[in-house]
Image 1 (spheres, rainbow, N blue to C red):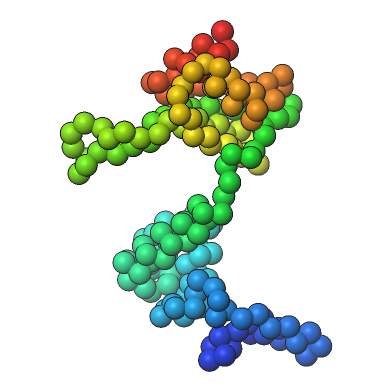
Image 2: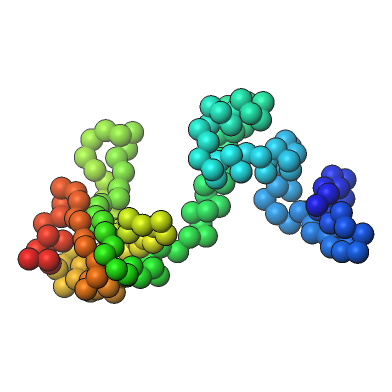
Length: 172
C-alpha cells in the first residue's frame, strides 16, 4: 500500500490491482501529525507499549501521545458489546464481580448515586467477558444474569469484591 498524502488515500502498489481506499472519512482526516504517526501510535498502543516509550519512538510530545491514546481507547470502547458473551467450555475459571460505578465531586465527600454492574471474565486465551448493568441486586436477578452468560456445569466461578454477599449466596 502506498499513501498519497495530497489525495488522502491509500493505493495498492500492484499495477494489476488498482485498489484505492480513501482516508478522508476516517478518524485521521483532521490529524495534523500525519497518518503514518497516527498508525504508529495506534500500533504501539495496541501491543501494550507504555506511553513513555511511545513518546520516545514517535518523537511526539506527551500531550499529543496522551490525546491520541485516549482517542484510540474511546474508539474501541464504543465498538465493544460486553453483554452478548456466553462463557462455556471444559474447566474454565470465570471471575465474577459486582461493583457500583459512581463518582464523587472532586473526589471528596459522599458518593453520588451510580449504577450497579455485574461483570465476568474467563481466564483463558480468548478472555471472553460480559458486563451487565442491574437496577437492583436481588438474588433472582443475579442468578438469571449469571445463568444467561455462564454455562455452569463446566465452569468454576470465583467471586471477588466487598459487596459480593448476594453473589456468594447464589452458589451455596
